[in-house]
Image (cartoon, rainbow, N blue to C red):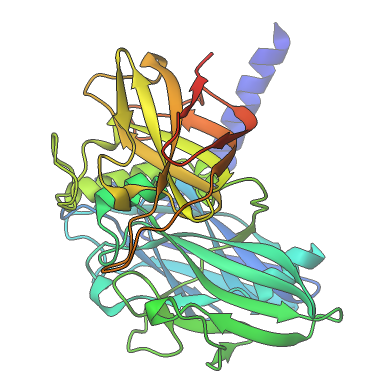
Length: 434
């Protein structure tokens, strides 16, 4: 019985000795014996903040390193303190200082004081991570998002892809939404999310780590060579379109440098990065609510969706080829189509993908009894003849879940591995929920 009492007393002593998080500003000194990429773990929250409520969206923090502006950080995760990991850049050996202070001009007008603590500054030591962090892009804000609390970068990650010249680091960003581009209901039907996930920058290095090629995703989804400026080895990119494409220059000075985490997405959809950070679903959902994109039972095609907690999310993989795929969700005595009766709401890409389908009000995950997989011919091009389509090879279902009351993913109710072949216009494959 002495051990729990001792542990309680020790915890109380540590809490008493530890400095309380400072309000609206924080300064921390740190030092390393050698230079390299530095990452800060910031634990912060702000009183009365709610990303889903106009006027209380977030407090904005301004970060400076050794007296020079580094980046801004928006506390989009609300009142309770949460960990935000940010890159401080390539710093030399010896002492440094990180200063964090509230930016009153960019903070929501009714957001309360921010509690700020730094739970450590780390030196990146893994060879892959060090190279990837050293070349991760710095993102400048899109002009029409400044002061608007929309389309904020939530996360950055990278993948490593072998190439003939060495290997490529591919960086992608999850934005809280996109103000232009695909309508919200179609996003859910064909991507299973209302966030915007975009590849922004790729850099190829040879066996000695020398950069041999750079590229970025520019307006119109074009991927030209990157010829812009760098800060150290970090490319500078400006978010320039309402669907979050980037450019090599821009007018804004506000910028973001979220930590770039490594992900291996073999046999997984990009939305798996969101699953590993479930709070992203909540941030995206309440932004939809604030922007008026959630309604009771909106028809498809009007840029509105029902409450995200009514959707069933299915992550699956397959080879669609020149066909199209949709799902039927079996709930009680009915089948609910994921395409909502619209051919353009079907999946037309190979690999892994996520589909989200609205279910009747009051439906919960245990009410789902089965999933059908259907194959369709793609609509003919304007004025052109209909084209025959090959069968779809449906390979696996990674997870099936709904969101809980806090807009967080619940436990998956199904994992299935095939494959099964579905002919276009033929009988669907039916996968029962155990």
